[in-house]
Image (cartoon, rainbow, N blue to C red; front, side):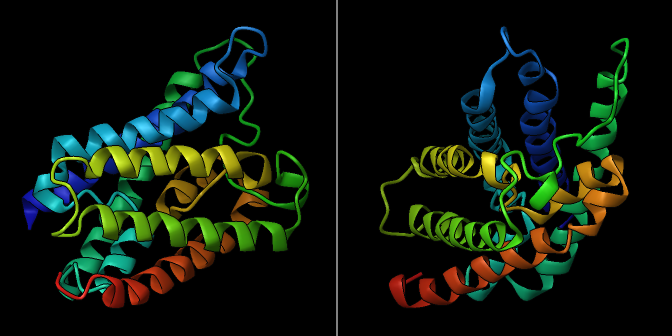
Length: 228
């Protein structure tokens, strides 16, 4: 179990550090930065590289919604769920702290949203709470569905990381303007703790919606992939 938890810590840290770091640092330059597409690709690359590095140890969840979805889908032991989620949240907080230490080294730094998720006035495009809720449920559902399918015993071997990474990239291309894209409660928690009160007040949605989407995907996955 210790090796699994270390793998989950490293993978989740890398996801938050790489994805949110791209948003906070590189995308902060309007004319030289990477933009929404670059941030979306950064998140996809963190998952892709994390899966191929430590996924064989822990399953490469890096996300409480995936852990719960895979448990519902019969792919993860119930005894692993709570330790995985605690580790993922701790890793996300640690990554957010590391990013703060780096980003605050720039003169005139202001915390602002700190790559946090939000709706309404905290949404990049000022989308409503309902829009964020629906989008997060649907996108997490498909994300966990892709994870279940790509890691199925009958799926082509060796390509799961590519499919999962590209899926997360696509999800970010859709959802960044809506709520800065979560589909991952741990990823939402780390930055929100630094961004402060307003973002913490909306954090509930970025736990509830991804978990609902993951549970639905896991339940469907038991039927779609009965041999796993």
